[in-house]
Length: 327
Ligand SMILES: O=C(O)CCC(=O)C(=O)O
Image 1 (cartoon, helix red, strand yellow):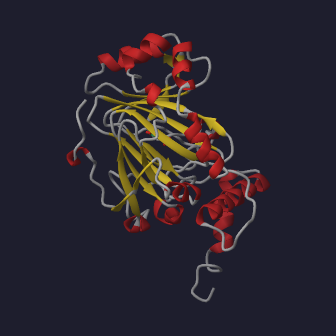
Image 2 (cartoon, protein in one colour; image 1 turned 180 degrees about the horizontal axis):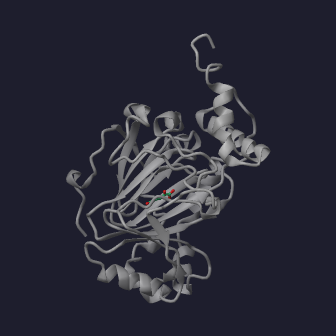
Image 3 (spheres, helix red, strand yellow; image 1 turned 45 degrees about the vertical axis):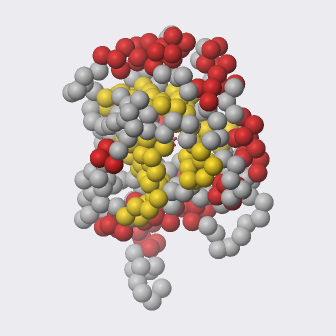
């Protein structure tokens, strides 16, 4: 399998630092994980038993399993919540779900040629995925990841997504409400991460919108008139390769590119709920303020019985009252 090089990284007009890299047994690691600081972890063996998960192996052992496949007319796979699509909203996503068996997906991947719609499989691993895959899954280095979950007092593991992406696909910038240990099995993925403090520079869609949690800014073609603070965005980047694990802290924005080192990438994420807060300390951290903002939006939507009214009531509260220098 080929290596990646800098020419494969998409060029963006964003200031970028580097994400630190630590060995799994480095004594400093726990402090990163417990303090919501991203870090690339080497040598954990978290998914060693899945290193042979290429399309042929998975086709052999998951052939009839129905999988969530997204199809897109371009390279961007911007996630949306179908439950938030309402009849009054003009919403035209460029990608659409197209469930199919793993065998159908594998055949499409093998026959794919330039100009065809792009494919991205994102399937939760559960015990219906065939006993060979379950056997490999059981042999993940659970002891290691569960020890980190305990040390950092994270909540339960909620899911593991198996992600199979064509090279060149992009998951645009968004944040999740869970802690994520992201492991690459095959190929390379470039991540650009932004801390919660960058919320204002990244302009996530409103909570009631199907694109909730996704940045409105198109990194390939930013609209600086609509999103002027995007000019000030500062991120951190890292390329994650086979056997590496990237810790993506809860509420950190992330943008992901599958690089050309391989015709497709295979990765597995480990999503954990955040743990109960034992003692609230003030001032609150930026990610805690993000949860408050989300709750305010949700509460207003419910109280008004109309999510379309949330923006105007927030403007009425803020503009001229909290926006002048005297405040
Ligand atoms: O790998 C990708 O394309 C997206 C992964 C992601 O956003 C996640 O695991 O939260």
